[in-house]
Every structure is written in C-alpha cells, then in structure tokens.
Image (cartoon, rainbow, N blue to C red):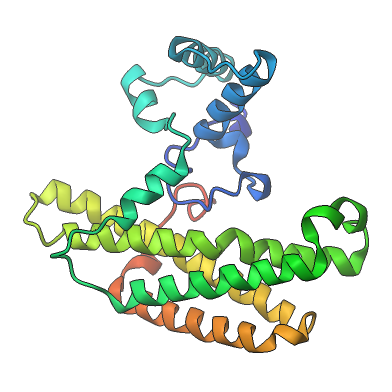
Length: 253
C-alpha cells in the first residue's frame, strides 16, 4: 500500500501561507521537496544552482520510490523555480491606471504601514534578533516571541494576497472567455481565503500581545480595527471565498 505521507497533494502549495517551518504538509508538497533539493545542492556545491535536468532527475527518483506517476509537462507547470518573491510581488503593485481603486486595498496598505512600524518598535525594545537564541527557552519570552513572529510573518503577506485577489477580480471584467474567467475566479477565491486566514491568525496574535506589551496598546487597537475592516471588505468583494476548498488543508478526511 502506498504511504500517503509521501504522496504529493496536487496544488497544496498554491493557497498556503508559505510558512514551511509551521506546515504539516511539507512531505506532501512538491515545491517544498524541489526547493529543499535545490538548497541542498547549493550548500554542497558552493552556492552553485543545479541544472534543470538534475532537479527533474531528483523528482523522478522520488516518484519511483513512492510509486507516484506524473507527466513531464505537469511537473514543470507545478514547480516554480523563480524564488525571487520580491520580483513576483512587485508585479502585484503595478496596477494599470484605469483599474478601479478598492477600499480593501487601501486598508491593506494602511495596515502594512502601521504593522511594519509596530514590528520595528518591538524589535528595538526587545532586541529580538540578538536575544532570541538566549531567551527562546524562557516560557514567557517564547510566548511573546511566537506572537510577534506571527504578526511579522503575515503583515506583508496580507497586503500582497489582497492585491493579487483584487487583480484577479479586475481581470474578470476584461472580457475573457468562460474558461479563463473560471480560472481567475478560482484563484481569486483561493487567494482571498488565505488572506482572510492570515488576518484571523494575526488578530489572535495581537490579542495575545495586548496584555504583554501594554505600552503599544494604541497601535494594537488601531491594527485590530483595520483587520476587522479588512475582513468585512473581504466578505463584500469576495462573497464566495469561504466556500473555497484549499487542496490538502480543507480537503482532509
């Protein structure tokens, strides 16, 4: 019988939060597997990037061991070998002038600005980058750090995913055929869902931080209000996103 833990889940990486360290599906993720092999190759070869055929060879070996089969073209469609996320994110900020401005986008931009400043202030106060290894085992500090880490991880992610979802929504008005509209609608709702999930996780972390860093209570309150408004706008702009089933995450038996 096949080991389900070693079986790739198609598209599991499409609507995740890219926080592989916290993910329970790394053994089922083709992108994580491929990236891990690329990084390992670079470590063992003085930073040299592996050839495409070598990456593909690794995947063939894994596939044969787990008795999985996939088409050569399907593999390359799934795997994103461009790891420059900043370049990808930059495309999302380049909105044609004729496109509608959404209140949701403005809220996401405002939240990012305030959250970024908040995180920098916390880092300055607790000197997180230098004390983390020394204090992480202390229960009180670990709880504080874990919640700061959540806010930090998602503060730009929320903005980027909202912009992407709105971009997909805008493309629906350009007059594409039914198939293209279906693809954009699917991506739009999946992206909106992971944005909403990220907002809710951040809200929980901020609520925990409220009693831990009382001197920042006004900033936390402001961020909580913004996140609440963002959730409301997500419901308005993407009314069907809650019904979206993310591969793996929402389809487990």
